[in-house]
Length: 565
Image (cartoon, rainbow, N blue to C red):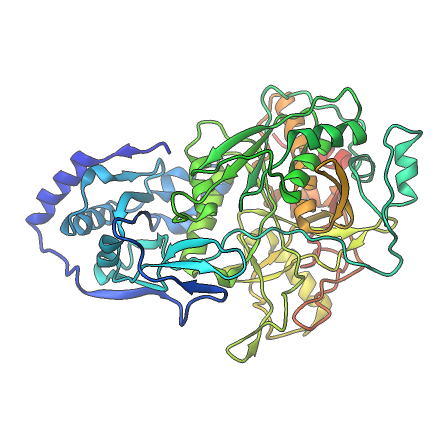
């Protein structure tokens, strides 16, 4: 990671603060704590002697209220910097606890501090915590975490969050094998080299979906990328998910043309170890549909690990890595989603702010909305029923992708995750659209969601019976994991077009999508996203928390994108 060390400043700060009144570093206040160990996790006891972790501290932005305005003006950097007094206080606290200045680095934006190689005992002292080793009952994943931590009262208003602490989950994939629906049929092998493939597929679009059909459906058949030397499409991969290049070649031979030579570049992040001999459906699907929609646009696959001994959060490791790059892909797709309640509030907000910084640097960041409709199971917490929004999908500064199915008409897929955040207020860009939705549904499900918050998804694409090559076999999968790279492919083509015209990429999409670009989206008015023992929200005219504003029409969006400076 690209950091600059501040050893000299730490020493100077120590000298200056030594002359001032020293805060009471033993006056601790709980920052976050779970009532019990999160579900499916079991403590294995105290980590072995000598275990170390890398602590990440997020400092609150000095000009927090100006951040949103700055996003639209692409001037976020000057606003994410913490107040100078925040840095001084944190430095004094660390020096008091014997943390060596040489082990501390500061992010390029100045708002994240990383303490390298902190012993578990030292972390416990700093945070009034009790770090233990935990194992997940289903995945056998082991991590070092604490179920609660505290900060000195003097730092409470200066430090937004600390990681790793109480965030236990890992990124969850948003796909599943197809479920049987009325009218469904067994998939047949598609021979992409015979006759008119599009005509063939139109008669069976309820049965399986492939790139030729998608390019026809979303009106991008005739566009040929022209800025492949400058435009890149990125894919974030977590949870030991690996694509396979041979499967990609087979896929593109079948669904593009035999002359296609599609490849991807792998970048290993935070000890991510790429193993193409252990491919997974998720990773294959992401790479295959990014390539299938945007070829020959270069694809970069970020294989994200979890540090050493599972101490790092993969979302944080990935976005931190990206923000420290000099050049970032103009479009990035992530097909993972967790429930908001998996994340401590301050931690989710800190991550969301980092996604905002990506948008301000001209990156279109897309996340899948999840596959549980309004929530899985009975959705009862502490005796109360509550819909279960997903994150990062609920972050206002990412573009969230829901799922559709069929065509003529295209309808909402019943697995499409959607709803309203319990963490983030409604952004101005979608206020009119969401207000109109509430006028349409009246008091439906009142009390089960936050009606003044960020609604999602924003856009949608096919997410039902998507054809994937896996270990040289043809498989079908469902999920918004499929929809995310499909939409990302369309957005990447739009960025390609703008770059080829000497213009800047679209960057943060949502104000544009909810504004003039709505005319370039196919409104979807049928279907719903059941969950939590309800029928879920309905798809209606205009925006809704099932498929957002609709699915993309590339040629119309291309024309609208041409109107921008």
